[in-house]
Amino acid sequence: QLQLQESGPGLVKPSETLSVTCSVSGGPISSRIDYWAWIRQPPGRGLEWIGSIYYTGRTHYNPSLKSRVTVSVDTAKSQFSLKLSSVTAADTAVYYCAREATGAPSIWGQGAMVTVSS
Amino acid sequence: QSVLTQPPSVSGAPGQRVTISCTGSNSNIGAGRDVQWYQQIPGTAPKLLIYADDNRPSGVPDRFSGSKSGTSASLAITGLQAEDEADYFCLSYDNSLSGSGVFGGGTKLTVL
Image (tube, rainbow over all chains, first blue to last red; front, side):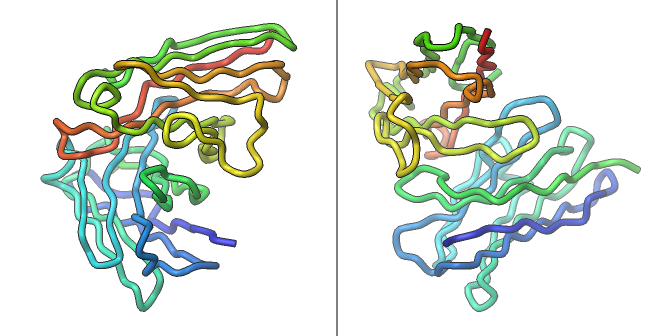
């Protein structure tokens, strides 16, 4: 059974780079039909799609975040990662990773809360 | 301001039928892009209820159904149960945003 688990720093200072990693277990990250996505949710608010990556490294990003976002994949470690630069308090959120099968994020991690504060 | 528009809240009594709308535009739902629906219990990750407009993943009760017409989509829940009280989100993809995913703002369902 496929499982995803996020890991992150918990607290990041303003202007620094937020990094979160998603570990995939129970199935191959090199699946030819899946993308791997990042989605976030600020406290008490709705969901925002950040971007996704194919195992070959092909990426899609939300244009509103594209200048600050990098998503990468490490197939050897069965992990994919999110980096968000120049963070502000507005980037405080629960960051979810998900398997995007047939265009639908279908299996989600439990989420990692990241707070931006000095 | 979300690209997809949902009502902030809906309510219904146990056993009743409720619908939640998701309105987009000709660059997303109206362009034929698939619509997904998620249920989120506070403090937990969203759960996929409907994918590709009207398909249910294995394990999702048939009380949940999806439909799409023009630039809008709907989620219907029949035989409302107390456990259905949650937040519901729609998701599609937008051709004018380089194929980026776009969510609705979410709808809080209250079971009276």
